[in-house]
Length: 160
Image: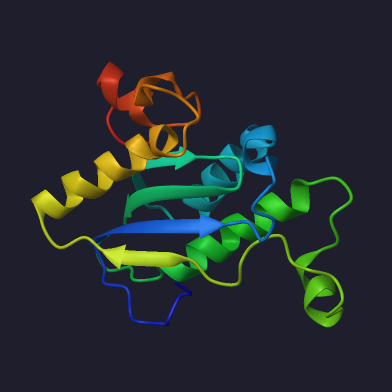
């Protein structure tokens, strides 16, 4: 579901999913370090807490919390995409992709998001995030998937 420009609410937690256009791609796990860097750079520029995240070959899911007084979750995600895209060898800049309609952007134009309603909804979405590699048949146990925040939570490190 594309982003429908509903206002994000300051201090709230959100579940989100983002997909690459190429559903056969393995780019996100092949370039996991670059994606991690993109998230860290975006967090430095516009802080937010990553409560849970999982990166699969062609898509990712996460739960993050915006700071009090800040409702700009959409801009954070577009910044993460732009930072990640710029790091990829051979990828034209996003501005070029916008002008050249024959070039297909890396990501689907929008991303799915859902405002977390309460503690039960939060727990359900964090579990969904962490179980996703199992659902897709990548591993038998969620803790076996290396591209997941489940390891931080299991160690007691808390959110990213």
